[in-house]
Length: 219
Image 1 (cartoon, rainbow, N blue to C red):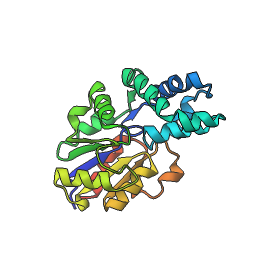
Image 2 (tube, one colour):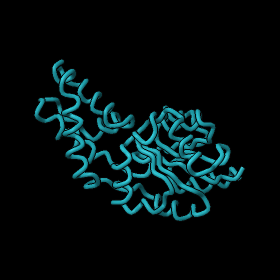
Image 3 (cartoon, rainbow, N blue to C red):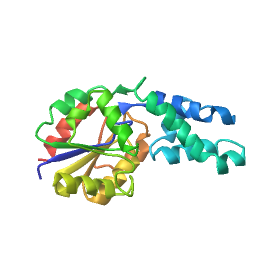
Image 4 (cartoon, rainbow, N blue to C red):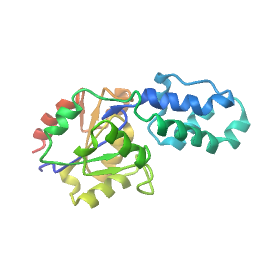
């Protein structure tokens, strides 16, 4: 069962974007008197896309009017700031580039619940885009992770069977999407989610360079 396709999550797996996302949240909520978020809080909140992220942030506030009337404005303010400061503080995790360069025999894709344009720009700014054959964002398909639809979309577009693909991510959303699509799942422990949420994965690795050895074991 040779692996021909590796699908990666983006935030928390390839890159640490938590500071830039926290800064964008705090810019968005500042006029409304909502308590700013810390980077640690941001790490717990992200993963389900920008709309859901802002809903979670709003739920921390006490003003019902903010919750009911201003969500779209908050999203717009978030995107305004984040688009202009996308990778000010975002970094590539250790071992990512070295590992990607060893995977020339496999097709590679990214599936993120971040918007597609922001995902592409993040990868481009950090010199990672050239390693990938396809980028899927939150609006590329009609459903997002944990739905299997983005995974199925990648399999179809890159013409790879489920048994020849794996997904690598830091979240239960990645694991659930991969399992539902019938592909092997590999969780990384260094990202945004605690290991307790990763136990459904077929494999768990502590560093990205361990991925090469896991893939060899699947041949």
